[in-house]
Image (tube, rainbow, N blue to C red; front, side, top):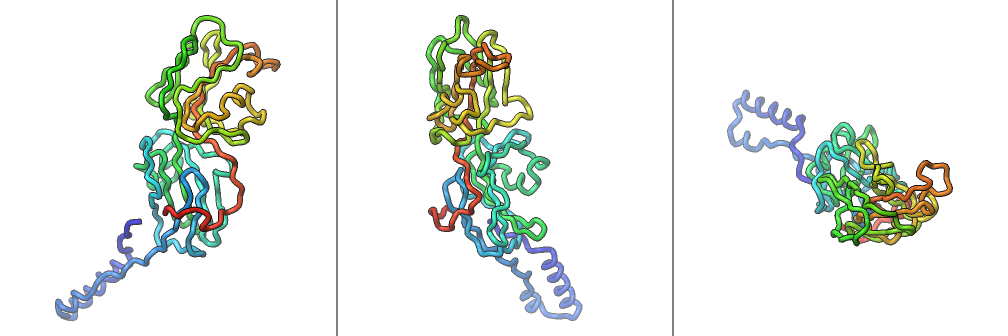
Length: 314
């Protein structure tokens, strides 16, 4: 972290001393020896582990927060965060008194916010302002009597991979500048079996059975092209759920396995792999889903990682 400015109390003491010396007629040589007190040095926190995984933190306990602040552990190379736009964050915080976990989104799913001081709080907002997707940021602050040591990973809010040209006869997908997909269904009958077609091929790890997948999607009926569901609407967060265990329609459970994080995938789901056999109004419909895979991971336990288990990067 950059050095902090002298605290107001230190400046006040210096001014008082200088005034007293001037009134008593002390020499310029003596005045030149009067300097502000040094700000106490804050012991740095060491952050280990790859970005996107729960970090390993090393620091003396109890930790003394001399001054609140932040440090960029990894800068990130994606889009820059913009005020008022959505932001997806993984957050891991420890109580600096004893290293116990205060909060960890790794135990469930990343958190969706609007990037603003009102949504994040002024300190976290300022710590992330100007950062890019992929950044890992360390934040230390004092909350009452609790010294909080927080690590934040900035995740993407849209797919960002290499474009893949789909074959003829499939729906056409257009993307707005913010990534919102629009689906145009072709004339003709829908396919009878599941179609899995990557549109953007991400560079992340492959989705595995039992992982929690976080995704944004739009769902369109093949019969008339009408949007029946979308997580791209304002105020709607991405869906996070475990894949491959029957919590989703079968078309998702089958179609998203082994796809890469960061991909955008089109799924054409026939009724028997969708809502067929249910009381849903979509029971007889073939649904076209366009899914942006933002994150996929096995849920972490609530155990604090052992220091030194990975290579130090902080």
